[in-house]
Length: 396
Image 1 (cartoon, one colour):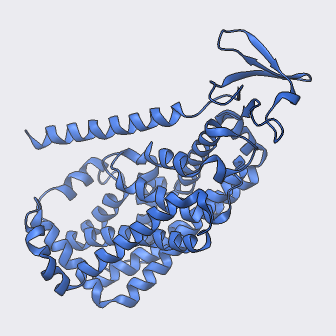
Image 2 (tube, rainbow, N blue to C red):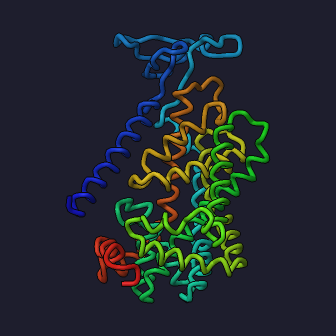
Image 3 (cartoon, rainbow, N blue to C red):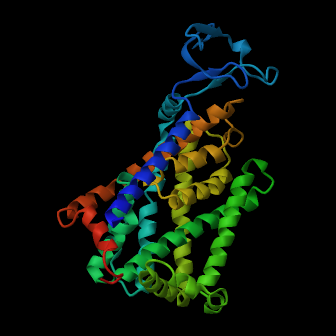
């Protein structure tokens, strides 16, 4: 089978997986306000609110009036539950637009901090660029990730521009790869700190286990990678030699090994990563609060790293469906709080609205990248970037 055919099949699979996940996410939610008449029953759409109560459409197509005294309460735990649909949740954010504005404002700090971190890591490889150039390329990469979630990701675009300017493709790929790894580890370290705060909270036990497991795996992987003795003991060399692109992997591995002798700069990059992740968590916390979430602050610092790891690890365009599914599984009704007895559908709907709003915040904050990219679009297309980075040896 030709490589071009394999790529087409791979892209189709990615799209199908994303489509399946999106369909599942939507099946767990409701678009319009609804009422669940009793536990286990199908929600009925709210037609209108009246002074006497709520008028809903029955499964038979008729109308039914549910009076306020009938709804769920501590005295009536089996009573009907009002479920706010996605449209109603979005209207709620419009009434509390200050939370959304604050989320966008704090998210704007992420790119400058990332640019400083990336410039620091490039310097270790002997690649020296100005802060403004690093900021420009970081904005372009973030714009691609949020606005053009296709085969040409933001990391590839950043690596292409650096390789084109310096003729150091291996080093450019290495820095982008390490930048992503440091970011993921920084996420889990923040999550690990949140674990210590939330040890007694049974509602987030799954997130606690996932964060601790990934953090342990990252520490073990780092020890093996940067210890020649451990690599010899486990026979990592022969294992790497069996990889299809061993020559490229070997060059990137050797370039990444340089950071073993620059521990202070790696530690500094980790601190910058904590800054980028902290502002992103704050953005999610604030926009979710505007939507009606009553989750505690540590729930976001614990749950968002898991969502971001899944977002990065599952190769579907833009992480669509992956992040939303994880949000629905981790931001449960018990975690979200809010309206009493919101139920599974109400919790899943609010979790989906939170992720959609967060994506919009990211898109707005990364919008300056469109300007920086369009200025240079006449020089090279996104397709050409991908082909150049995929072609030939690592330093071609």
